[in-house]
Length: 316
Image (tube, rainbow, N blue to C red):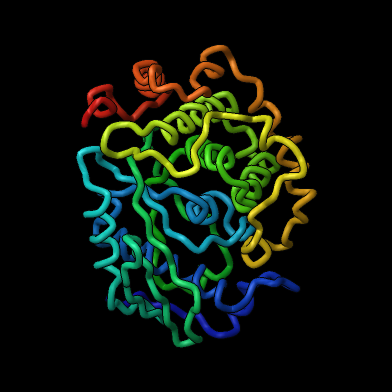
């Protein structure tokens, strides 16, 4: 299957922000993601999966104002589905395919699919990582791509994609910050908090979701949500402070201008201080005690717009 286009070397160069450390390879990967996502949608993959993570934030919320992201992160659309099966299907749809100026090939490394991208403008040294995670807790919403200038060179229509709700996407980033200081997550949180209308997202819901996701990271939940290495009870004070050791290896290559780490963490603390304002139930759940499993299931199914039933969460 081909996707018609009028992308040229000059337009690829224009996709790189002026005076940026971002190189042609990152710009090419970003464009290739548009072709890959369109192909996956046309072949029914998004009947089985939901778009999430940093690439979803860029494509469906931020557009050119967002940081670049190298992964395609998905969630199961159906709790009865199997993550590995959907990941294998997605990789199979991309393996050996030519889409516009791009050629894709899939290789599994340590249980994770890596999609190599080659193009008529040059090969991309970094692979596109493909992951399929557990189902969303909130009902997804279909969102269009945010328009960018490069898309005027596509002679095909970008689809609307089912996406994890913004509040849940951000809550997953907060939960990850509880166990590791990833600058990309801090950058996304600061961008959302300073960018209307997304800055008006439901902060209390994000805090509730993040508290619950921390509990699940520590304890696991049914067959979908596995215990996460390095997970610990919620400790807002440990990361809502300055002076952390940040994993900023890629942030300068993916964001423009790359944020000074000291400024990024200061903005994070200032803009998300409300995450420390836990109510009594959140304080209890944040302790991540195994004995609170029933309360966690009840809280997840009582969320506004909840997508899951108690039967799903109690399944083994």
